[in-house]
Amino acid sequence: VEVAVGPLLVMTPHVVGLQEGDATTRLGARKLVVVSREPVFDEVIPTGQVMELRVDGAASLGGLLVEPGTEVEFVMSGGPVPRTIVNLVDLTVEDATALLAQQRLLLVEAERVFSEDVAEGVVMSQSIAPGLQTLRGTEITVVVSKGQDRRPVPDVRGMTIAEASQ
Figure 1 (spheres, rainbow, N blue to C red):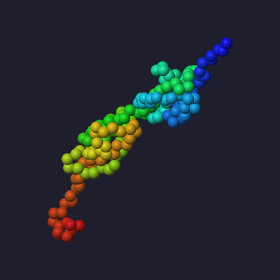
Figure 2 (figure 1 turned 90 degrees about the horizontal axis):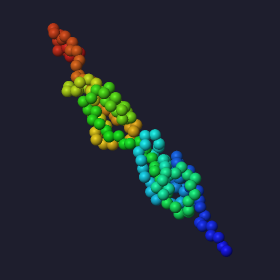
Figure 3 (figure 1 turned 90 degrees about the vertical axis):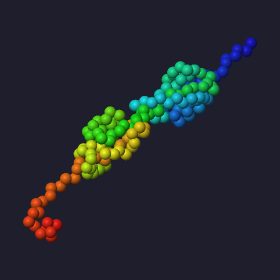
Figure 4 (figure 1 turned 180 degrees about the vertical axis):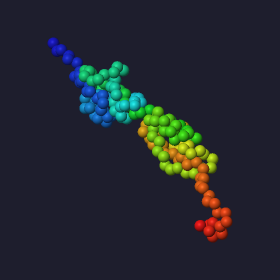
């Protein structure tokens, strides 16, 4: 009488927390097949890091006994959710800074320029157009108004043209 033992089983390795390449290598060494990589946005877990391993549709931390050739899936971090740039033009620097801080974006003031039409401290232009998407932590550069260019004019009454010009 011969007793059939069945196929040799392998243990799924712990891959949660590894980068995709390292996780794929570990699974390949055990003759397991990665069939899909589902990205999920996460504000904490870095892009490309394995968040979950699925075997037969069920989440696993590793340690399961499976046959070589078993198909497994990764749930990978897609990194932070992309931010949509808002319109900062016509906002005060304080309001624009607060609005960007809510999205975890940074405001950088490039320069202040005189403007006859825009009040002092108001954003006149921005480096990234509203509606575009960007990564968390991106710096948005703005140009801010100094207000009107008003300079005192000295009293030149009774002076010659040469004296007044000086």
